[in-house]
Amino acid sequence: MAHTENDGISLAIYEGNFVEQKDEIIALQSIFEGDIEERICVLSEPDSCGSGQYVIQAKVPFEMNVKECQVDIWIPTGDTPSIDEQGASAADGPPQLGQGISLERTLSGQKWSGSFKVQFLPPLTLDLTFPSDYPSHSPPSFTVSSIWLSGNQLSLLCKHLDRLWEDNRGIPIVFTWVDWLEKETLHFLGIEDSIVLMPAESSDDDVEDKRVVIDCFDLGEAVHTMLQYSNHKAAVRFFQSMQECGLCFEEKLGSQFFRLTPCFHHFCSDCLAMHCNMHVTEGTISLLKCPASKCETVIPPDVLQTVLSPKLYIRWETLSVQKTLDEMNDITYCPRCKSIVISEAELSLHLGFCLSCFYSFCTQCERAWHQGTPCQSEEDVLQEKEKRLQSGDTLL
Image (cartoon, rainbow, N blue to C red; front, side):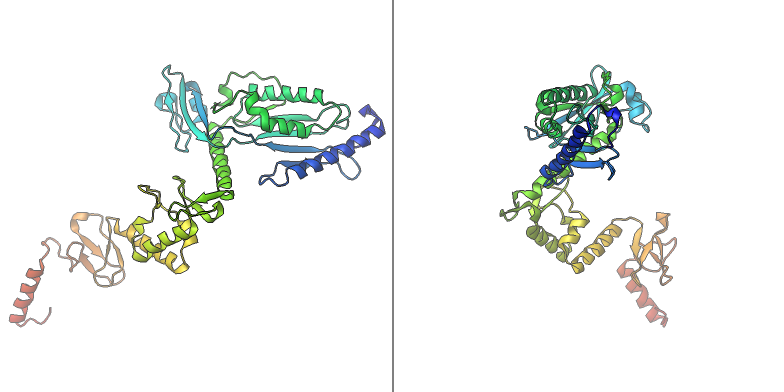
């Protein structure tokens, strides 16, 4: 941030601005230092000669006064091809957003609509550049962006930041801006327990404010980001607070729990380990599900690997492979060497050929293959042996 005559300010004011800018950034980093997510990121700063400007990025989360916020999705039917490149047109069905979200055509037939809920909304991004005459004469130049706020909403925020500067002209303003955005944005925009999400090109916004950066062009990506962020923040909050186990009913810190998805039932690590150890030891791996009553959520492999001993985990893998093979109609076992055998594609032949011991057998009775003749019962086999013995035939 080298001083030039074109700056229109004296060297003393310029140097004072530089010191205040540096102190402001240090103060901001100190204020938000304890946050899990990086709130203040310095993207650029003046070099040792004073050339260049401070460029910082602030991530601004929102304080929600409700447990959940409903996100209503609106997609004009004419926008379907640009949203769902693989889904042809609206006439062929709604765009596929993934994440288990289904869309339905509205009664007017002009829009696809759907909804989902989040506990936390992704932060707003505030990018700032400090000019040489900040804070003595001018505010930082800035842009704002968000994947869920509309262009008009972002423009209203920009205009309010302008007013805050006018009320506090001549002093560092960034913390005031960030603090107001974090605490007052939802109330200022009239947002309580629901928001509307639609593609940027589908909105009625005609925003002339160049400080507004529209992020919601890929609606599927926006939905994914919102759900991912909300789930991550909910998990962080869960692990940092006290929780009650659904099995032993003891209260422990959330970090000592496993929180299963998608059911979100939670159990302490000791209880879940006992549950998993019992079923793997007894071979009842089909019961390795969430212990909550009537819940069908399967306990995932990464949780099993954590709670089981290496020996039991190997046993679980072996039993899982065996269970999968048993459920495959074309898999059988050689009656001689017990190797896995894939039956012939033509099922009516009932032919299995073992590549290990080269034995051809009937997959129904597991005796030597007898093409074109019916399987023998145990009684028939015994009678045949007796006849051979009586006839002096020793080749049994």
